[in-house]
Amino acid sequence: MNEPEMTVPHSSEKFKHFNRVIRDPTISPAARTLYAILWSYADKNGVCWPDLKTLMQHMGYSNFGVRKLIDELITKNAIVKFRRGKMQSNVYNVCATVACVIGLPEMLISSI
Image 1 (cartoon, rainbow, N blue to C red):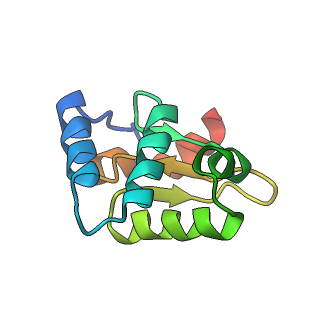
Image 2 (cartoon, rainbow, N blue to C red; image 1 turned 60 degrees about the vertical axis):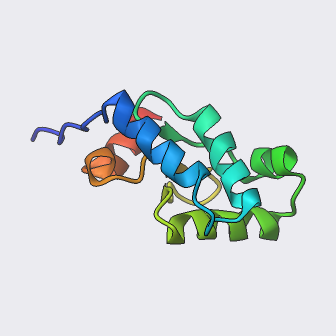
């Protein structure tokens, strides 16, 4: 059985999405900062998996505060979050476009 191929978004599409999120006045400044931090960890596919403790240290926020910002980014379609399992960091896709996430969870879990 063949794994679905993950479509790597063209870099201009990734940057369009980045600019849309960073400049969106309906997203809080703290959530936009967190988005930029996630982006800094992302690979060429827009995928990253920093743990919550790392994000808390970068943001200077509590566990609850960072989770609230992640929820805001998900609600605003800035990121997509995949849960890998108990005691493992979540996986985030900072592209949040259909092309970025088709078949993503299975491929991510096996490649991380």
